[in-house]
Image (tube, rainbow, N blue to C red; front, side):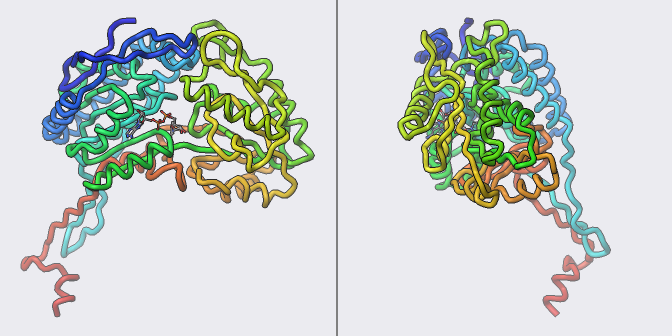
Length: 481
Ligand code: NAD
């Protein structure tokens, strides 16, 4: 792999120190990533602040730049996808889709309307509600979808007129660093700065005095630290955090159909999706059929190194996450669960784990209550639908969920009772740039995507033009009389 360098003020910013990045398919370090110093972080924020004035002045230029960035991404799939597969583990085809999605998000925001709203237009005043940029954004991303999630931040932040400093996860810094390099000539210097380092670098960013906003995607635990760190100088925060999505199967569902779709919703990206299905509730009468359907998919899917032909599931991304999945599955088994398929790590090098379907367990077991974020799915049976809904909601998480049944009105009525940001009916993980995405409860604060996500990268500003000759509009005058 070629050398990976940070981008600060539109230029390559070499570092003295580096850290190793492992290929999760082998467990071996295959590349070095730059370790950003505090001085370099200051320089990045300084560059972002300096470029903000010109950048916010020209909306048409911002839109054009986002479109050019999308073109570069579309043309760079063959460069970026292999790097993403090497550092993240996902199959090459999925890595290509992720690069494509980054471009789609850039195009979407390049074309998203953001005209001011007119609040009043009469004889006394013309009042407009405008959105103004916040300034500099500190953006922090996780390791499951480093590129897509970077563009969920870069594209709306830039369209809204902000500049930014972005830090990828230390497990997957390389593709994002490469994007910084590829886009160096597209963004004006300082508008997008890409830095890399450990978790501590993230903490420096959220405490730094320059950014006015932190856009964070990651775990609940870190999200809470980010909120605390941003509080002293009242930085705005958007927190996209973890989930423990329930899928509730209704008694009129077709077991074969739902098993296939729920398997896809649970095992996409090897289960390492914030809004993947993480627990399934199935009525007793359908339980065996749904379990068998899920198990059939788990048995037949090809697991392996992402570069290998036909592989659909790669390794777990990193050693701590691999250990966590092993621990949660072992805990379930030690509490009486059955692994209908899988249940253990795979032989050989790398962080591979067998696709696992667990039965004979219920709420109160760690793998049902916690976010497993890996290729192991607990299937829980229920008798009473109201009880299943209560159990689905009895959690601090509230990212998304799904309800499955033939009577879609009934399923939608159940979906409406789920306490979560996205409630799907007969699908799961259907996401698009138009839809706001965010969590209830501990799954987050605020949303990303759509005009609502764009709005979070700005402040309201009321511009009130009085038409009254004495400067008093009717409302004020009536208060004084
Ligand atoms: P993580 O919280 O460990 O790390 C996320 C990022 O935060 C990394 O870049 C990390 O270096 C940085 N970081 C760590 N400590 C920090 C601190 N004190 N201050 C600032 N930054 C810090 O999460 P992860 O393990 O990389 O990602 C997995 C988690 O992310 C899962 O819980 C998953 O559900 C969640 N996630 C949520 C969404 C969403 O949109 N809601 C999307 C993807 C992943």
